[in-house]
Image 1 (cartoon, rainbow, N blue to C red):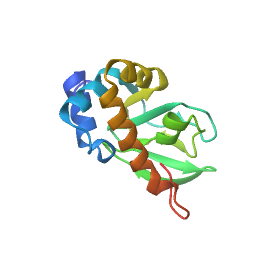
Image 2: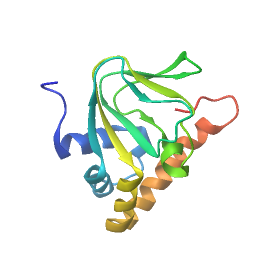
Image 3: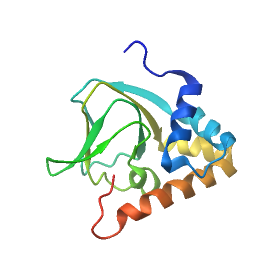
Image 4: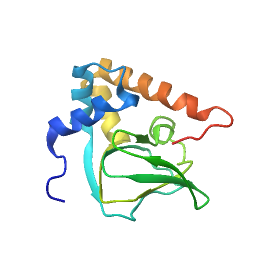
Amino acid sequence: MAGRPNGHDAVAATLAASAAFSPCSAAEIAAAADVCEVVRAKAGTLLAREGDRGARLIVLMDGRAHASHDGEPGHALATGDVFGSSALLEGAPFELSLVSDTDVATLVLDRHGLERLIDEAPSAARRIIRALSAHAAPRSAPGSRSV
């Protein structure tokens, strides 16, 4: 996928533009960017399966995807949208599946990356965990969709 975002600066810019990371400082964003992995996938790829224990957060860096429940298409995701906060923070299974609609670049923050962040930048880790928890909380309310 030539011309797609790449490198630490692009990762940090994607995180900084994401509503889930908006409470974080530039230094905290940079620390998170250090532990994220860029993963690319073709259109139609199953990025996360409903019910699987993923223990990872996915941030859409480039492209489009959609979440689905029981095979029924649902919420559309675009650049900066996050998926899997509960899977990362609580070890909960994915509540929805995530499928790429186009070729995508995603940022993946897995359990190992979060633990590394806690060890290397504990204040950044605390702020990021709080931000992700707050971002996920409204989606956990009755009648709302969790993404």
